[in-house]
Length: 270
Ligand SMILES: [Zn+2]
Image 1 (cartoon, rainbow, N blue to C red):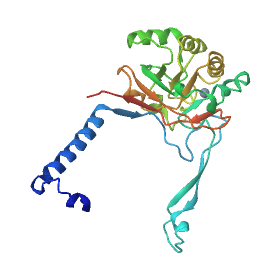
Image 2: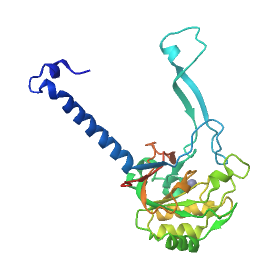
Image 3: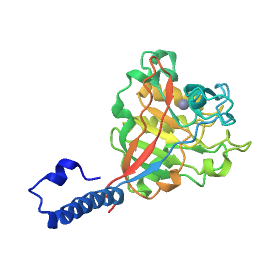
Image 4: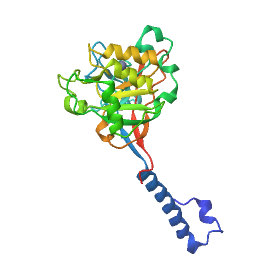
């Protein structure tokens, strides 16, 4: 609807008003198209839902309807109950999440998730292809170094390095889900020595369970970097060079980690 004051406005000659409207519309349309064609956002996060897989010993996800629109609007006898608020109970280390340094070892207990710099979660990144790795297979420091060379990438301080193993697409929801490949303690040390902010994996643990996982966590704490677990869609990133990685944690006071909505952003794609 054209505002009354604009209709009355004498400075727009009536016969040309449609041209101005058309120009404004075209400009908006063009900028919207440009925005969409220049930026690609790849979603790297799992869904959160009751019954989803969680790491051994981490609380199961519970999700209930806390309030409904029918209650709010005092509608009685309605068959349909549409949620207006959910109540969710879950561990901090649920689904796609980041660990705080305080999670790694008691020695780093002051470095909780709310105190970690946001710059650690907003970084440049690239993804390495380890999709040939099978269940419980280790990824060594030398293999990481070789893959970086093959991908023509040099790790810069502050980077996030993502490790694609195709474990999610092959094993999510199966009995083998918790038996994914993982990095060795030496590989974690090597990443830390390159000055990464973090690395990220598709599995529920960055190391192989009962082999390197605990050690990898301790090294992350000692060298001051972190990792993301349960990432998805990494196959959409391999071979595409650098991108912007964003995965901001919730500001949980004293938190030992947090679910994140992790994304890879490719800009200037046009
Ligand atoms: Zn972890």
